[in-house]
Every structure is written in structure tokens, then in C-alpha cells.
Amino acid sequence: MRLPVTAWASITHRASGVFIFVGMAVLLWALDASLSGPDEFASLQESLGSPLLKLVIWAVVSALIYHALAGIKHLIMDMGIGETMEGGIRGVRIVVCLSVVFILAAGIWIW
Image (cartoon, rainbow, N blue to C red; front, side):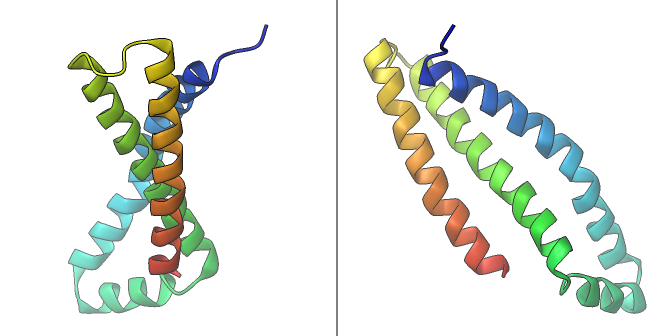
């Protein structure tokens, strides 16, 4: 059975929410380290220079971007706009295109 693009968007929206929940551990660790004192803050700044940590942060930010845009699409659909299959497909295409642009911009900003 072949799923429509709207189903894939719904599945990835849920998956990105789970990924954000798990990724919050990294962000909370960074927040704790940044607020613990000057030495820990300097250590965190040094750690943030590593490509692996940058990649992890970019992944969490990317999930947040996609999840937020898909959530906005859902809110718009709750207002009665784009509830048809055609409107849903158009909405998914807009969300994916905007997500790619914003995720690339976030990658440039982080790297």
C-alpha cells in the first residue's frame, strides 16, 4: 500500500516531535553548563566548536523548524483552510519547501 504525501507529512511531524523531546536533553545540558559558572561556560564554548556537537544542535533545530511549520499548517487547516486532499497536498509542499530553506539557513548560521 502506498501512503499519500499527507500521511508521510503527518508521520514525520510526529517523529520530529519525538526527536525534539529527546534532543531537549542536549539543549538542557548546554543551558546548565552555560549557567553553572564562567569556567563551565568557557568549556561549553569550546565544546560547541566540535563538528559533532554542531551537527547534533543542527539536527534538533531542524526538527524544531519542521515541527513548527507543520504545526502551523495544522492550525491553518483547523481554521477550515486547505482541508481538501488538494489543499493538504499543497500545504505539505509549502511546508517542505519552507523547511528546506529554513533548515539550510540554520545550517549556515550554526556552521
